[in-house]
Length: 75
Image (tube, rainbow, N blue to C red; front, side):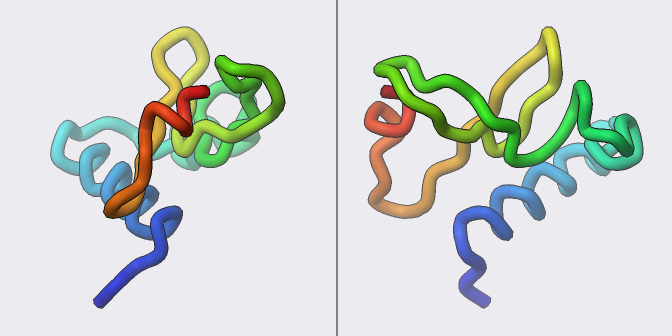
């Protein structure tokens, strides 16, 4: 099965939550105010983008598909 980047990223993150016995974003924060997928974010180089997974005060997480440039995503 070949998942799109978003689907694969979310599935992988949910798997990590299960492995580490950590609540998933929806279980921990049903409103998405402090922990969610696809959180709007300002880009380092200007403009708007999205963090694939975000948890307030902890991290913004970005997945990239095969042959994609993480440096470009950061900017």
